[in-house]
Length: 275
Image (cartoon, rainbow, N blue to C red):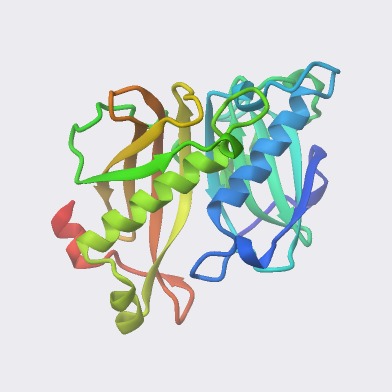
């Protein structure tokens, strides 16, 4: 993948962290929820650069993420932020998650707070690195078109931020559980991957926030396989309460990957039949 020559110098640093062993998933890669935590931390930092109070979850209503490189335990992480000028994401804030000078993921926040403080970045430099789909994830209805219904548990006080908003990473974590169960039910099992070497990796993620709930609320998810292509497929999630109050809509795009060669592979036939 080509990158702008000075990708690690674009924008300004807005968050630093590292990959902890306990943050890695069953592929031994940094779990997507912690990319999300890094982007959210950067966005809240940007919102306070002019001295205003931290809005927490309310800093954005919608975020689009594209993953470029896997990170493993011990990697040092820096997020750099800038305002995009020109191109399909003109005026949006780009958060570039970089490790060892190389781009690992990028997030696009539209109508982000604090953007006027940030330096500009040329849209033409970033265009090929951005998420391909910047449309809002389908909000849908609770049960419409769903193929998996998940009980994803009560909201704990520690899962709410200082302003009472559900943490961005918790939205990712709960819908990841739904994805896993949905795909297992369709045949994308651990046994299938061990036998064939064909795993799956997220390439894009879009999250739209619709509302917040108090600690103690019981959350449910409804998920469906929304698109199946030759080498990628997409899932849509509705996250909210059993009474129908929606907290978030999420769209995930994943690739089928041959874990032996680390190359993109054809989507398994059972997904084609399901789609």
